[in-house]
Image 1 (spheres, rainbow, N blue to C red):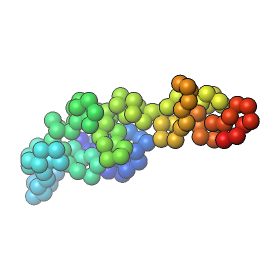
Image 2 (cartoon, rainbow, N blue to C red; image 1 turned 120 degrees about the vertical axis):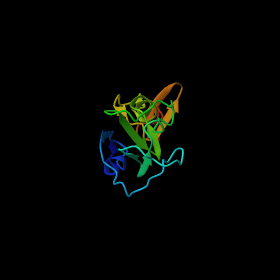
Image 3 (cartoon, helix red, strand yellow; image 1 turned 90 degrees about the vertical axis):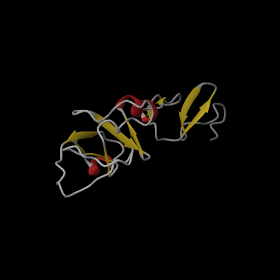
Image 4 (tube, rainbow, N blue to C red; image 1 turned 120 degrees about the horizontal axis):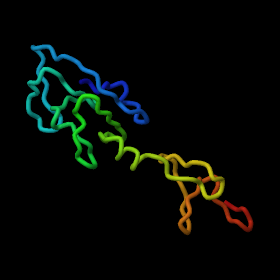
Length: 128
């Protein structure tokens, strides 16, 4: 299975598994344990190779090496779908305009409310 490098550079998209056969003359070490990978297939994520048992979510430590697994990368982290959405999903709805606030966007918080920066203003004078 090959976690395609070009997809892993786009942190907003999941990286789906495919497979790649390692030529017998090529030697690769696992990014996690640093031991040689002797299996027939290589797992690749963040431009590094991994043993099937070593490719894990940085948050919950669940295995991501199984065929058909989807992983997400952001900020040089390898994450399962659940943790990616928990960490980088939407922040919620803006209390002023009621529109979704993406997780990557800076927000203003006041009295349990969340606002887009451009929506946060004094209710009496509208000063930002």
